[in-house]
Length: 611
Image (tube, rainbow, N blue to C red; front, side, top):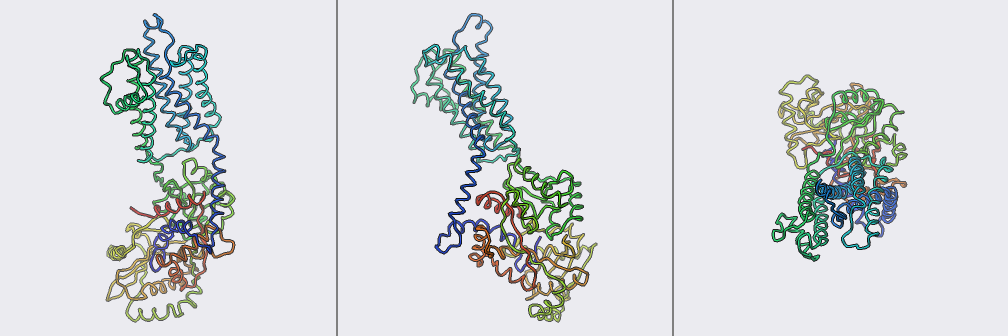
């Protein structure tokens, strides 16, 4: 929605400025700074410490998974079959024995890679790790007693070591089962960085595997006793598919070892490809029935000028179990951003927010609510969410405006002047003529050609010709210039309130044209029975001015003071102040420390962009 303002930029300004807000907050080191940054940093550090403590069992489990993986990779290189009886050879069981070692190596690499996803509490990672560890434990245990370690001569110790190394996979299986309820995250987003990371880890493990393998080979395997440096060179050649044609394996173990490197490498490329090209974590999908249900709930419980934008096509919906309450949200950068407060029966709201928070955490998302009213702040705080004031909404009392404000110095002269010049505001109700739609579309295109103007979404609307066919239009026009500006009326779900969506004009309009438009618009709306009109958010207005303001709010206040020359926040408030509105506080609800606030701010910026 293009909310009413002289430069139509408040949403993008607040979103774009968050990153600069936090930069100034951290870089401001003047003695008179109102921010005690050390306190905030200490609070963030304490929160991180508590989080690490809560996740300690997960870290421990990931360590055991990594240990099991390394054991599975290295042990097959260091062990040999104790004896080769004639019947064993006749049944060709030796080949099956080497294949169990190959499977062991495969499971080892798989477990090492899974350990990183387990740190993120991925549910699918838990499932794969559990069954892989179970299978590896079984393969490991059935080989115990039939192998020896090549560099250990003590027979008793040789029999004991395989049993000891079996502790890690068995303990891993037990820990995975005990901690299974901690792994609930369902989503993951594949990207280039993650794919490269998987590839580097895979090849690091492969290089270690190949180097140790060549170094631990016995002379009878290739007729050569490889030194450590030569082992590394041989491993790299084999990894790069250059081969080692100057040596020939003399034993089954030697042949198996060379094959295992190539299979191991194929696995590494496969894992990387899966990591790069798996589906993204969020796909906007709304069933027609969901939108219908959300609309019905808004009719019964809606009470905000932002509520109409919860029905735009860039939102998804999350309903309470009883379908008597919902939130409208978009997920960007793994942050679920809800527009305004939840809507529905009062008794349903707290359980709904709790359920949605659990749903977000299950998808590896952070949670945020944008431009909420003060009504439910205690509910958000009770659930452990942070509160940050982001501005004030300007609401005009139409009785006072028509009786006093429009007759004052800010509007009286401009109304007389433009009326004399033949400008008038015409109201058009649907169905509209195509010629009218053509005219407002031309105005919109001219407006978008102005510097800094672009279509935005999420808490704003955009030009949609089909949607405008169903809406009431107010067009400023004259016989001489034709149509020069327009607004489209939209419903505010607050009782007795109305607002507009787009406010657009041609590149050249008379001075005071928009003031004239609003003076006539608000007068007409008052005559039609409306009691108030929402002018929209004044970004950063009133933030950090109270004595009990949080340090984050005072940090944002610095932006209001220091960056006004770039974004004209004060000018925006001054313009809206001409209407003598009542100022209603609006807040951002988020979770996590300063780092998550920055991420949430960037996510809000992206949510408002239309490609």
